[in-house]
Image 1 (cartoon, rainbow, N blue to C red):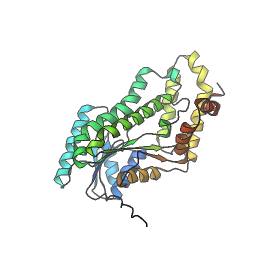
Image 2: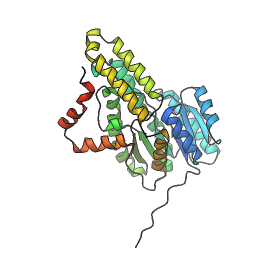
Image 3: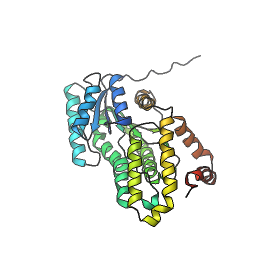
Image 4: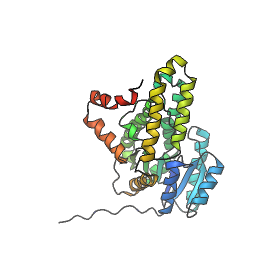
Length: 298
């Protein structure tokens, strides 16, 4: 006898907050969620970014909200604005939160200044928790959902992406704890792990990495320069040739928000799935040998 599968949840009447919606994956996700029927509060840091995003939306269901995930005052104001707007249209606050905002520091760890690592973690980890905290009262009332955007690098670390991976591993652990702590309140927590996708972030990654290396002591920077520059080229080529698209990421987030029983983790792209599998199956020594080609020209 066939059992009837539960239907996906309807987006109608459900409000979603997504951070980091100015560009890239966050922008694609905000527009797709709005098109599929969610009321979307798209977090942006600049008013002009919000106006551009509003112009691309297909309806008034998308509303840009000024939000700096590293500024507690900004977050409190955003949470109050979202609650007021939701109540004015008959909704009961936020039903889902997508923690997408993030930056990427790529450089040899010996060259990464401590303040750059602090900035990385402040945005990608501390910021994600701060956003979650200000919206949790609304999420508890709606028995809603949290989607934390991590990366394939939350499972397997590449050389020269240690600072970024530190934040992603931290976000993975934080997501596990939140999922278990919030279960009694009916709030679910899922992680979406995208692999390499062609977005404007790669230009920023290259520029920031080269800046860090140029400011490091020359004798230290020279130890890494050739292999790091080769790595940057390889990383960009991998993203540009990837068959995974921003819309694949957006579809996955939509699935996590509408699944009757959301999974704890979703991988986006073959490279992200491979990283998750290899990290479970292979010992560290085998992984080290496999990744040694990244640093072979040192």
